[in-house]
Amino acid sequence: MSTKAEIIRELYPEDVFHYAEKLTDGELEVLQHVRQIIENDIRPVVTDHWERGKFPFEAFYKLKEAGIMNSPKLFEGRDEKWKASEMYNAFLYYELARFDASIATFYTVHGGLGYNTILIGGSEEQKQEFATKVRNFEWQTCFALTEPDHGSDIAGGLATTAERKGDKWILNGEKRWIGGADTADIVPVFARDVEDGKIKCFIVRKGTPGYNAVPIPNKISLRMVQNGHITLENVEVPEADRLPNINGFRSVNEIFIHTRADVAHIANGVTAGAFVAALRNTSEREQFDRKLAGFQLVQEKLARMQSNATAALGYSVRIAELMENGEYEMFNSSLAKMHNSLRMRETVALAREVTGGNGITLESDVARFFADAEAIYTYEGTHEINALLVGREITGIGAFV
Image (tube, rainbow, N blue to C red):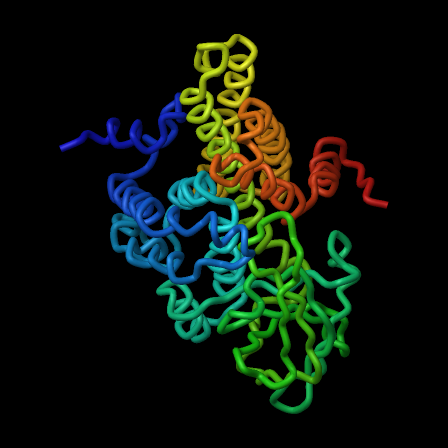
């Protein structure tokens, strides 16, 4: 039987500082199972689906067999019944994104943004109804906040409206870039109450009249993720499906505090995945009767990629520790997302460079990482927005406008 250290080396040879040793044995077992499903069920279909711009739902849902959200192994010794440890969460996103950014992104929409919205905003009854089915993968969820004309300025610019009429609410407006909008069973929709002007959140169930979602075509990044444009025309939602603990953008920020860290973990995984793919390609291909990996210029770039991957993983691990200990603030997640996204962008470019012409083919894996990194660099807070959040924290001066 392999030791824990041997399992970690097999899973993550790029983890040269042994960060994965912080995982429990149970968490590591779940991640091993995830790797098996990725290699046996998802990898064989990912290139075809990426090229066609279709999500491999059947293969993706194999992940529930590993119990990635609800395995008892994740909750051994924990009082928390709804969420596994932040360290496991960091490495789950790392594992998924290390293979493919679209798979990781789809999961963060479901198991991150959507799930956390229910946990943070919902009543105990709503958690029992919605969160239980989401983490068991009985229901797919998403997160409908961004609008056609409001992205970075959504806090003050959110235009979708909610009007109370008796025991129901009437929603009108549009949402854009909503992952899984056309396939989700329940959609948390954020809208501004016309009476008090505060942002509230409503669960719109699949098939509700007036709700229409159409996938956005012709993307060059995260092609497998079905980002949707939502139109809401007099959509009726019962008061019982309003999340009572979402009351203003401060509540939304509480969700972002968690999920912005998730995207930092995803950027970390993409960095590692691009590096591993580049190392594999350059170790196999020969030019001038030598392995590409044997040339000084190539080794310099590989060393930079290893450095970036190690630094990004360090950010993710420390963020996870702070979150687990309740010592975590928006500033931390903004810094981590900014740093890891920058390192990711550099690494995918270096990986593309050292793999030459093969680096623009999907078979190399590098091309997917290269294209998908651009979406990750932007979503869940652009580089500039996160830089301004960090800048305000370190100077005490807000410079947004």
